[in-house]
Length: 90
Image (cartoon, rainbow, N blue to C red; front, side):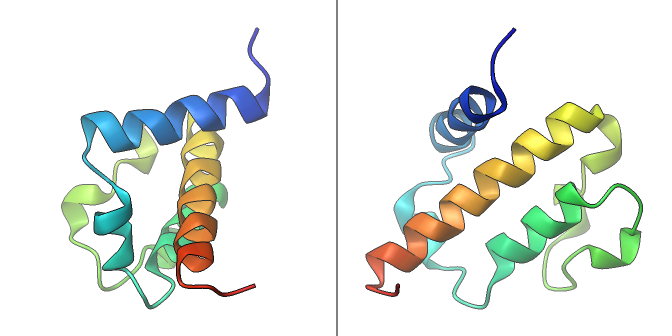
C-alpha cells in the first residue's frame, strides 16, 4: 500500500503528463483557483465549494473514491504551493 504522500506525488505527475497541467498552465490561475479546487475535492459534501469560475466539465469529484478525492486535493495544493513559490511568495 502506498502512503498518502506517495499517492499525491504520483497524482501531481499524472496531472502534468496526462492533463498537461504544467507550471505554465498553473501560472494562469492567479486568484487562488487551484486552492479552491483543492478545497472542493477535500471536502466530502459541499457541492457549493465548486469554484464558480471553472467549467463544470472539471467537476469529476463524485466519480472518485474518497482516497482518490483527497489525493487529487493534495496534488492541487502542491501545484498551488509551487505556483506561489515561482512567484516568489513565502
